[in-house]
Amino acid sequence: MQFIKTFQYRLLPTDEQNEILHRHAGNVRFVWNKLLEFANDKTQLTDINRGTLSKQVVDLKNSNEFLKSTYSQPLQVQADRLYQTFKKSRSKEIIARRKTKISIVSKIEDPKLREIKMRKAERFGFPHFKSKFRHEDSIFYPQNFKIGKYEIYLPKIGNLKFIRHIPLEGTPKNVTIKQDGKFWNCSICCEVEIPDVALVPLEQANIVGIDMGIKTFASLSDGSVVENPKFLQKFEKRIKIHQKRLSKKELNVKIENGKEIKISSNNRNKEVCKLQKEYRKLRNNRKNFLHQETHRMITKYDGFCVETLDIRNMIRDAMKKHKICLIRSIYDVSWYEFIRLLEYKSLWNSKYFIKMDKFYPSTQTCPFCGHVDKEITLDDRILLCPKCKVLMERDLRASQTILHEGMIKLRDNYNIPQEPWEFKTVGESVENAFDESVTSFSECQSFAKTLVFAKD
Image 1: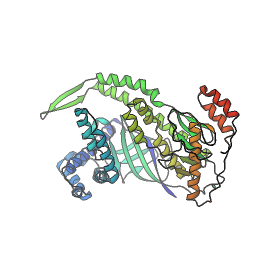
Image 2: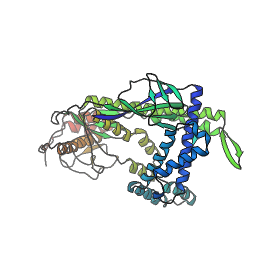
Image 3: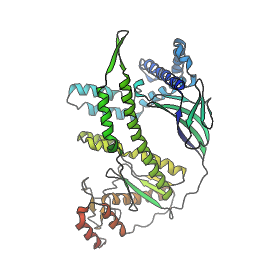
Image 4: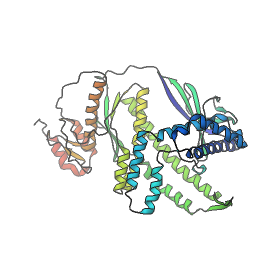
């Protein structure tokens, strides 16, 4: 079976090549901004098509000689990407989200703040102009590149050395050169042939349910827990120091053609690099943790049942209640990226993977009798089922509920007869749950050891 894999390497350009990369990336950004300016003058989507935008790129090259120093394909790609972005901005999903944002902003009482937020909400989903101050430029090469052992050849740039820390697999299809602060990374997209491996029979598979949270990153149905590393707290102090120093650095103002142009000083540029370094460390630590945990789970289990979190609504509710710390924790924990990594790694390694419905009440449902308790709040950490009297820790109970519902969906997908519902005791999992719970529930722990599980 063929899959698409992307391998990322750090480039080691010389000073001359670094200037060339900045110049070519700036030309690509210039073409994007000019195409967007041209497209904004059009009132209807039918007036914007690939042919019109491609002709506009040719006109830009004829009227601007400096664009001819850049390879033509990265410039022409911008026309197709801009068209696809405009097409996506008119989709039903994006329109619905745009209307939702506008309705939320319209309720803001402060007129000045409402006006600023409204302009941003009305532009949601539409393409934006690119700024050179973000240091996130990129150059895309769909073909005509050559990859050596430690070098890559790019048209009109030459041979660039890179750090080959992992071997390259498959057939290279395209290359993207992306700026990361003062560094440059090379992403090589390859088509890889992975041999088909038969799935483990569902009756013998070691499948686990995963409940994700903030206090603990993930609680698994077998009783194991993945602690939340909280990387943002580790780097927050240093980031604040550099942000405070950066705010004190001045921007030089230069008047050109009657317009004020702000130019960053050398000291300010140095402080920007230091701040980018801290954010890069934070980002790399988080990625490394997610890859290590997903790899460990892939090698240990045969399948995964995960919940589908509505992260956007969670952040929106936290904003309404002005819970800034909760919003920062949600962004820091990276649930979406964890599920994305686990999903494609399960596909590559022939593992079962199933997602629950977004509105499935995994926390409120008892995994042993199926009773739904709608009175459970976020502050309840130890849950007692009013029907079957099973006492369990909140996250462990939710993970076992997810596992039970996921097994039902897997059996439906593979046309396997459902097993009859059996009332099962928790056994040792109750004691394991209390070992992970708060110590103040010692009375509940002693009660759980003498608890008699029985049907009503």
